[in-house]
Length: 240
Image 1 (cartoon, helix red, strand yellow):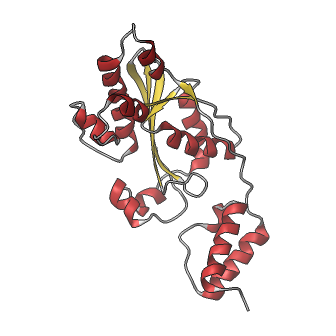
Image 2: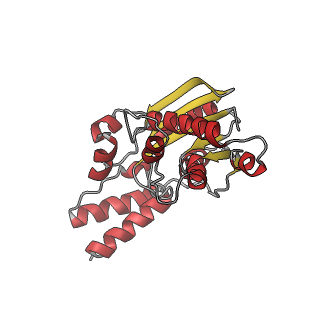
Image 3: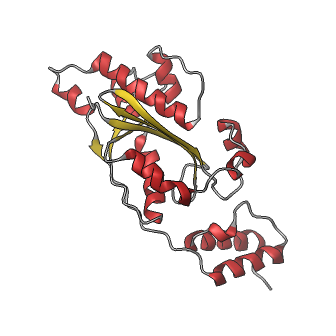
């Protein structure tokens, strides 16, 4: 098994890294199988949160608004991960958000990953639910908190240790292979900041239709402004 890694979990405003933002980062550095350091931060996504996200995580708009934005913490968060593999439950999800945030701020973020969900799919009965909470329960691991980043990162770390204890046999090359870190592939280009004219046109469109939008326009990229403009025109029509 991998003895050195960073267990990481994110809470986000949604499921699409192209459209949604990181809301919370929790990470645990593990060296020699033992936790050696922690990193945690809420993140201001510069937008209002959907009620379902507030209900799921317990993170409110007020909590998010008081947090630092991604630009001020991404370098520290990336440095915490060092050159270690990332471990998580459906790790490609967390990696895709982290890599996009890193690339948007001029940082490289190429990682190998260890996916505890993949391991659960291999070793748990087909009929059993394999989300993080259900998997922990199946293996007798009590949890005091769900859907908060640091607690979920720790749960994934403990789950990996439990799976290795139960199923890793040095004589079984198949089992050995699935516990190893694998290269993760997620292609992303740096997003360009919206131009002054784009933002002015969007603000005028919003004012014209007398509507509110749940995002802070100054922090939108060109693609995000274009996407929001198209959505408003599709719903309310063009300026006449």
